[in-house]
Image 1 (cartoon, helix red, strand yellow):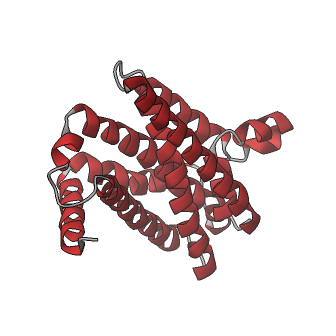
Image 2 (cartoon, one colour; image 1 turned 90 degrees about the horizontal axis):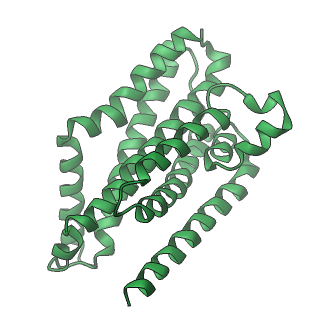
Image 3 (cartoon, one colour; image 1 turned 90 degrees about the vertical axis):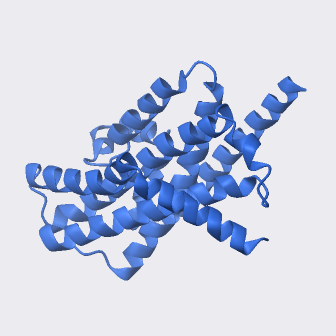
Length: 239
């Protein structure tokens, strides 16, 4: 592995993201603002923050994975960036790996800020063990939603119909996965529908259910399998 080239590419990805006002605002600033606004609006205290903080982090993670990964990767192909990258002294996979690592770094910074605000404003500071569960859930959840976003975006690579599908999947997941309130307690139907979204088990893991790592891994494997099949089918059509 060409370590200097990887380091340079990663630095470029980080600088490109930090120079994007929209990227910094939507990934780091906006979640903290919404956490404070919703927290005061819903009267969040230390007890409710145990439930509410993972919801904010989970929704922020899914939003970044759906709307940053899929569409950006699609533009890499449409604008010819992938083709131009073949002259770089690295396999093309590193273009995607460094981008994903950059997005994860942004999400972890945002999650740290949210946990800090939770402690200072609402009186709840997650324990070290809980923070470890947060980190695992963020990585697996981001990977699963990123792969789902790639599948949807590549299906709509020509006509941009992916935008509507991504938004629909995001908002349905946000309201049906017990992010801000426990809708699953309203009936078994709502509880069952929630499992159509990785966010459901992602939040269960963040809220202390260590057994939720099994369905979280299952979601990742399923999303990876779907993306692999989609890529192979696209190659077959071009052959």
